[in-house]
Length: 484
Ligand code: NAP
Image (cartoon, rainbow, N blue to C red; front, side, top):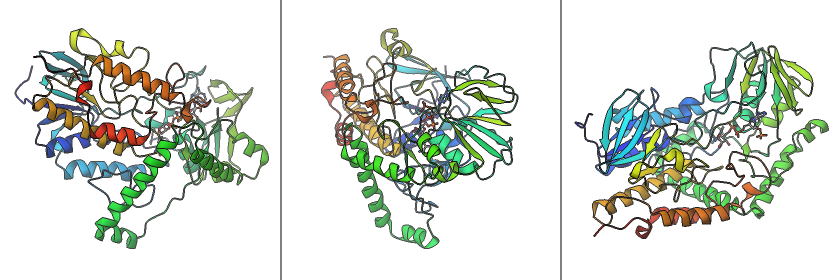
């Protein structure tokens, strides 16, 4: 075991929230080590490189609050630009030298009041604290369709896009019409010979205006820091106190308004048969809203076919649906992610030999999205029950990290021996959030990745203002008291 480095914190993952944790710990004067399984930073923005990838949350709120970016090229910047932003921030704030690349963590074990961490390289080190910043949407979900191995052409998941494969001028099949599938459809439709989109459930598509910023506008952002800051604050408020709060009320007026905007956009589909195929039969925002300014244009192209018949099987030459074979050169799986994995398959063992995999056997949950009893000094960023949806996860992570630092201070000041959330507080929170989840828009009758194994939404089901206030002031009484 290598104890020579003796860092206080281990951060797992160098994506958006891992970089954030590194920056904040550095500022606070703590020593830390970031472990990253891949060879560069950026998490989801490193892994997702599919054509058309962009953030559907406005760029000026999809930025760290302390590093607003006057250089965004557009209101909804492309994935590559976002990836570059995170890389630059990691360098600018000096956290990159603290990242060990190509070194995924395989084990975290609570031993002698410390976390023993083992990596895939076999290194074993001890830390007082662990911050799991491993993201939510990072384990591709492959569909369970008969004949998956029979297809003879290239086939890949959206998060594993094979850029060696040419799609231009080819017959492309795309299974799935979530945010990824819709962005890909809009991007590749004009250049492929034929695009066969296999849609199992129609999506609500909110039209957004995508504005390219001019050099004059960027210059104004550069020279007027207050304007940039005010824009960030106002847009955040609109998203967090507006949309993020409306989704917890299954009957909210704002969702009615959004649904009407979606319906207006749907009316632009001229072919009535196609329009009906694209019309959802559940409430808007029940699934995560798909945001697109050009999806409906793309699907009206003559070379695009929306197939709503159920897929029978995949065959060597294509996909058979409703009895008809759709011949394809390339098959893209836009079928989403396993959202219940979080840090797993990492082997995480807390106090008294309690294994996280067993605690989370049914479905993962965490006190205030942050902590689990019997796993002291172990915090998650964007963990289970975090606010998720059509708003900036960066702000969520920033609030969560501020909370973590406050709890660390309490331990340092002797208010707590270790940061161990009590079983009672965890159960109380979990019962309350489970009940609240049933009244949210996500529970109004659709299938989505927001639902747990029992069909109950697992995202934060309270007003966003409650999340903010919980994060601002940790409740010491919810932690195990100091032993006298
Ligand atoms: P997703 O929303 O989970 O969508 C998966 C799609 O695949 C759905 O249309 C689903 O149909 C379909 N599907 C899954 N299994 C299937 C099967 N066996 N047969 C036929 N269809 C099947 O996944 P995603 O599009 O990758 O998006 C996941 C999340 O990533 C988003 O909700 C969002 O949070 C994030 N994301 C964000 C952005 C952004 O711009 N910010 C962009 C992309 C992704 P059903 O609807 O019937 O289940």
